Image 1 (tube, rainbow, N blue to C red):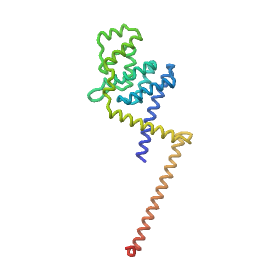
Image 2: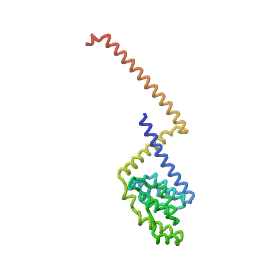
Image 3: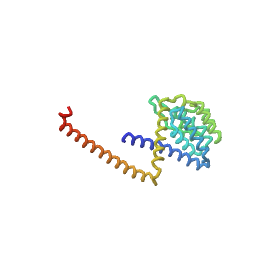
Image 4: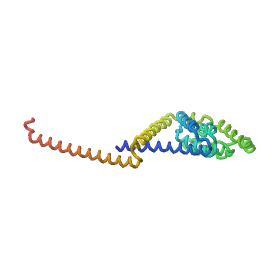
Length: 239
């Protein structure tokens, strides 16, 4: 029961983290006037596809996409920038394995789209004098294009090149755990007004089961004692 309980709790946590990320993404898209099922599905499918070829889980990617949306980037921009922000995060990797998170990369990316690229030094990207001059003199839309060009030239494709098969496998296993948690919640909630009611009934079931097992154990002890007495009494005859 302890192992099963641990698996249930872990699965529910994985599912809840995923659900919250989608909620944040949809909330940001709604504020930008872009919330449609098609738009959400586009970004979720991209996150799932990127999980299969990089070290970043779909949940991490969705959370970063939500942050880009919060910073007023539109769906087309987010779709285009998602692989690049993963490349940016991968570029910050050190020998010890430390790197910036996708959310941190999304913040740097959002700033870069506005021409503010000084923070990119954290990921090892230092602008040339000419690049700095271009950004200072460019208009808003051109700044975004210049930023994308610079980042693509410096780190484009790095997330896929540095992907670990073990990490990709682990992320896939976490997805299975997440689906288990989702299925448990959906199945557990059927017939109950709330999870609280379900937990109450589950406790009663667990108590009854424990009591039944205790009774069986008690009866087994009695049976064993009776058999022992029989052996003692008729031991010689049985031999």
